[in-house]
Amino acid sequence: MCRNIHQLHNFEPPATRDEVHAAALQYVRKVAGSTRPSQANQAAFDRAVAAVAAATAELLDELVTTAPPKNREEEAVKARARAEKRYAS
Image (cartoon, rainbow, N blue to C red; front, side, top):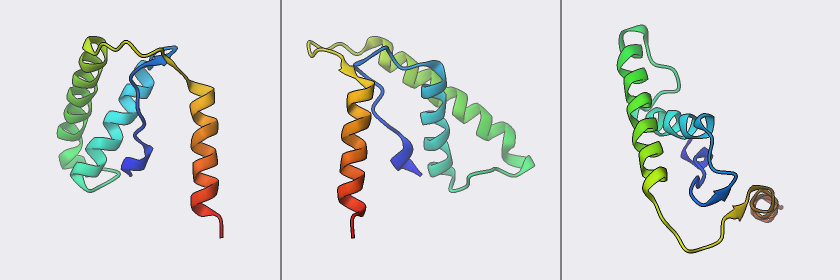
């Protein structure tokens, strides 16, 4: 599950709220050990996702760097190339 969490810092354009939420959701799923919580745990699960997303957004807002922002499309091409190499038979 956590392989779906990607770096969100130092990209142009910056990470969207949806990307931050998706990363938070993946993190909470991994920690909880389930993709879908039971009804009894749904409220706690949703609160955890919201808290992790808020902490992530705050972190991204406060991080500073002197490196130039990365291009999302170029990074996606590099990731695909790494995946092709890793899964080649």
